[in-house]
Image 1 (cartoon, rainbow, N blue to C red):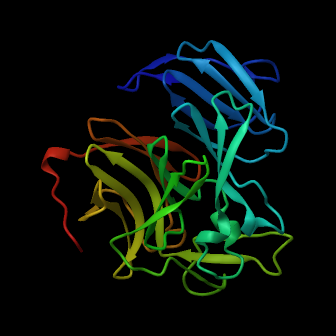
Image 2 (cartoon, one colour):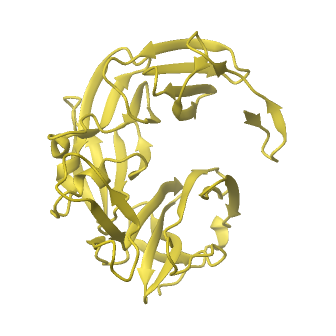
Length: 305
């Protein structure tokens, strides 16, 4: 479904099916240079369309069964997904660079085990869909933050040989423990529970520091986070200069977080435009909606808690 900026319906395209331009289970999409890319997880197929809905091409992936996030890297594409889900999960790569038509894989990087804090069985949480935030600064420079946020923003660069490697680690504003493992019967309900035949017992996590969106706008970098502060949940943005000098923290007080059961909200900042409008995807148990929040970047006042 295509909408105008004011929310008015424009047109729609695609239908259920296996033919060209049809879908069974769309689980990833991106608009890049007036071309719309849609990943069909069930058919393991990437399709791309014009803005009017014309089907322009498709590419089938042989062994890819997970949701995918799609980003532009100049004349290449960056796909984010975990490439292994079983005993070798810690060795799984999350970032995969492909040629522009997805026919050839160029390189892989971001091994799951490289940013695990070391607690048992957390790899599965780090490799789950929507378990990271990405910002492409240039075709050869990418910022990455795992959703279970350890107060570190990772910067990767492409070397002259074409491979990607960790270049810098940037400190966030809050030195919080990223998560703790809890029993389901304790006083505070877990934020995430993971079950698998490869675990001896279910994994129940209380996540104290979560990444929910990473964006560069003009000369500022905004990292949206949900954190525990003074025994309460707070949703807001860490703000840095483009060189990662800290500016401060913006709490978004209109987001209604409580400390009741199921107090973890599945909200993400999915997009930002050059006017400073951030678009939040609010996810509820039985519905979702888009919230737009404007920040005047010329009058940016923030404070440290």
